[in-house]
Length: 537
Image 1 (tube, helix red, strand yellow):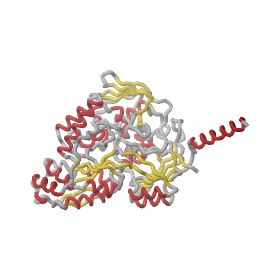
Image 2: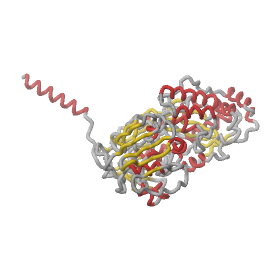
Image 3: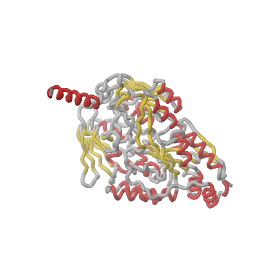
Image 4: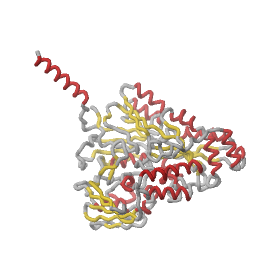
């Protein structure tokens, strides 16, 4: 009898263990990813938008990467690195036996080529013969806006698998920066074959290789069978990225099974997904900010802080978050998310009030909007992680401004054109919607990269404030994180006082997907990583 009882207990234990063990990934299948817009380009050094980077995330790799669901850095194409005592020399030891999708070897020369091509003054040294890198046709925006030319002095391939970076100055977030897409390593051979066409024919070392791209329709990646990392995937045979701009149409495509993952659903569709037995939801607190910017290259926005504050008080940001974000957003008072170190919770929330806004408008010299001509409010045509419906937000803002006597109209363009024209700060732009999802978990990646116009003309918000610029410089060159945190808190208070942009919201990312999709995770940086994703049969 005792033996029988023991057998029954053992069977019960095995049964409980069996139900708790995750199913083993199954190779094969094609995943169809429904996204809100198409990529602008596929050269990681020259793109800035998430729809481009989500392809780069799977085609390319960098020396380091961020861990799943965090911004902690770990080795990727570099096996290890060391930093000199003065923090000015970084030495990376590279993995051996890694190949690019075109069959050429990954080595130190490829690293020197990929990052050295972005330098304004190329102090680079190859271990082998190397290449004569063509001159840049356009500035590498991330490299420039992050002041990498002011940071990196030289890049040298000391041997086939060792790269040495010499810095001009101490740069606290340097390692974290190298995990970003702009620091991806590309195939020099593929680039030199046709430099102008590389933006449409990317070649990296990642788990998936590029196959074809039908603009504004779909983009196809295929499993790279010679991928170097044998721990895990890729499991999928193919991935199709479909551009479906309308949020409701994209969700309907998920409901009918034509796509597997729906990026940026309408908030109302989340409740529908909860009730659908074929779907599941995944969520991630967004490391992001959506904001309304001013054209600081143009008067009166450039010099009239009272006017900027009047608009901030006039816009009912809470109503926008409540009615358009619908539970998927948090009202912002700073331009870094509250989950990030260095966040200044003591900064006051911007007070909404028509009377207050009118008083500030009068103090600014434009009582009831008098002598202020009709202004333009540029609104995004696509859903982004930080703004679910840019055009709706724009219409709401225009309505709010009318209540204090300011005439405004919504302007929009195709996404690539919007980004290009906004970067140029044209005189026909007064206000513009933009936002940001953090790249590396460092406040510098928000506060300096987005708002310090004195650092470089490529920074999209051309706000020139010497005090702010000095704080950003101190933040970069201070190693102690606690001291850096205080610097960034002071910067946030200064932004509140000067109002160079109006922070709107931090959004929560909640995406619906079919239950057959396994091991897909949202990342704080908004990276789309498909290496370990697989489909249940």
